Image (cartoon, rainbow, N blue to C red; front, side, top):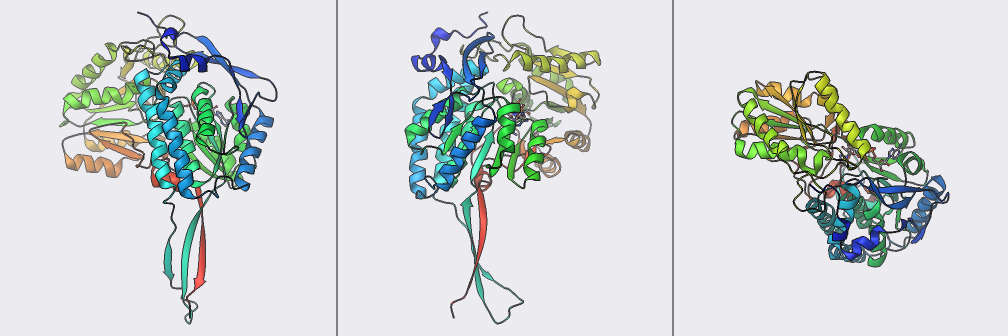
Length: 502
Ligand code: NAD
């Protein structure tokens, strides 16, 4: 089986883009990092370097925040009429749509993900996100109200609120859905009149850099969107700590999110944190197994398990436990591994060999603890391939059961009563998503009411929509992306009071 991406299959646009060293996009122009440092971009199917990105440090971050601040204070974007911002956002959406295939190819080569996935979830969903948020630009409203003011009985007042853009947004994104994550950060910034400094993951920065070019082409004024690449420790930390940033919008691990929340909280900055998960998929005794078995498999193995709301804990009623586990294991063991550009591949490599080593360590530690393991082998060769795994027989306090693995590793466990399933489902620091597979409305409602998760799915999993607020409870985050909540979190609200006319 061919395990490396065949780069001769790439479109000319993608091939051109993948060559050469990439620079930082600051104030509408391109420049190297002040230190001249760069980082390699690796194709995880082969382990080969495909190009290099600039490794920004504190001086570059300072320049990018300065450009975003100047654009915000200069009102080049926020003073535009809302319908003008909407039109530019729609133009940007059209430009992304026009090169969706090349963007998907770049993402696949950079991240290892399947081309069908990068097309649907990175390129196409980015287009829909921009169109959805563009519609909001003309619909950002406050409220008016008749006030009581009981301590001034002789006077009457009207009250009103108005929403203003929050200012300079510092956004930091992970590597699992790179372009889409970048656009989820960008779109509400543009709709509300804010400005942006975005630092994508050092593993997968390429499509964000191309996005910067498309923003300029669409007519987004210089300085409104700035993209800096580099490591979390250098560029990310400098952005988080920069006094010129009004809001930090972070998506990534709970460990880093905690550091960011502490830093932003100390300085009273606004922040939103979209963090990790260990989401349960609960299969009740009355579930339709023809839907639940492939549904549970897709819940964990989709995007190679590199999905924040992956159904990584499978809780199955004891009466059907063997049947469900065998069904999911059958899907896992027959999944065809291969490079993301090959349309026949069902799972590509993980994002890097370093990440695969971390995933594999969880499986080996489970094996050492006496778990029954199906799959979970490292595939020999230069790529970062890993066979999807299903683990049973683990104690509930084993790290593989409790911690986010962020790879194609499923921990399955039986339960006897719905109460027990809910207790296990909630027995984690995380609270991002959960699914319940059942024919019973009462069971579904009980799970919805009692499981602590930002999204609950019924007889499905991993279904997100731009209109639905997406966010985590507990250690899975603070705040929301998407929907009206995600948009409004980029605004600050001011109240006003006026006396009634006499
Ligand atoms: P990560 O936390 O290691 O890195 C995320 C981003 O933060 C990267 O750009 C990284 O460079 C940067 N970073 C790292 N250290 C930093 C620091 N000290 N200061 C500032 N920035 C820093 O996460 P990852 O491995 O890239 O991504 C996987 C994680 O992302 C998983 O935990 C996953 O659940 C989470 N995730 C959450 C959501 C969600 O919406 N809840 C979506 C996708 C991914």
